[in-house]
Image (cartoon, rainbow, N blue to C red):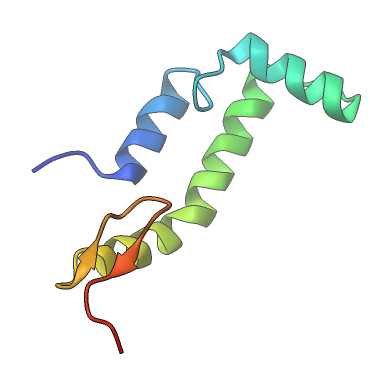
Length: 83
């Protein structure tokens, strides 16, 4: 069985990445955008919080896209059956 999106988020958070940003780049973005100094530990805590908040929605989405008739599960999603 392949990795789920939640697995990938957990894996990337554990490796110090938020998307493609290293810890230092994440610190820089928060400090630059919000003017708030932040530590690596605080970033890791925020990543875990976001992951726990988004995981239920992710599983809901995943069950939807696995249903028959759903195609192209990216930003161009459409249903195969027209009403």
